[in-house]
Image (tube, rainbow, N blue to C red):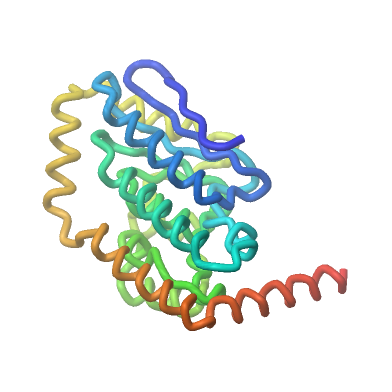
Length: 254
């Protein structure tokens, strides 16, 4: 359980997220993920990194239980910094990052996926930002890299989701496959990249980041400021409390 890294040979490093049951990552986990991706990219033998997850879904965002257990803002600040570090690590990784998305990809998962170089998804994968329903903001920067501007705004305001097939239509998801073929599909892309000259691949990553029209680091940090405002104003606590009450009521009614 946690963040695991292993070599798949031939210049391919695999980083796996495993926080049962839904991969809601605690603050320390986001920092560990950042370290794993950065370290993999710094290894001069690495040509490509595959980011994947075990369990029911790829990512459920931050660990809300950790947030609710904190009477101050320490957990929020740590989560903000951890997410920033992990998203940045994927974007700044010295080699391409191929991300394999299974099941749900929510909140912080969008930050990871949106900063990836190549996205492969299972046919049951869904993508969304429920932040507004949780009294928070963030990762619109990364969602905007996956869908057109007005669709991004609609998804953000409504906390709606899209399927892997819909993102494939927009070209942000490279390939959609049955879940039991997901790892194989991601490895096929990774092997294709790993067959290239590593010096050229590293130069290409720098070049592509250099011509990006959006500074993803500054943009996301700007978003995080509003998340902190909502928390300081007590709005986020109020909305999370309502969410917890609704969830408890739903469970009681079953």
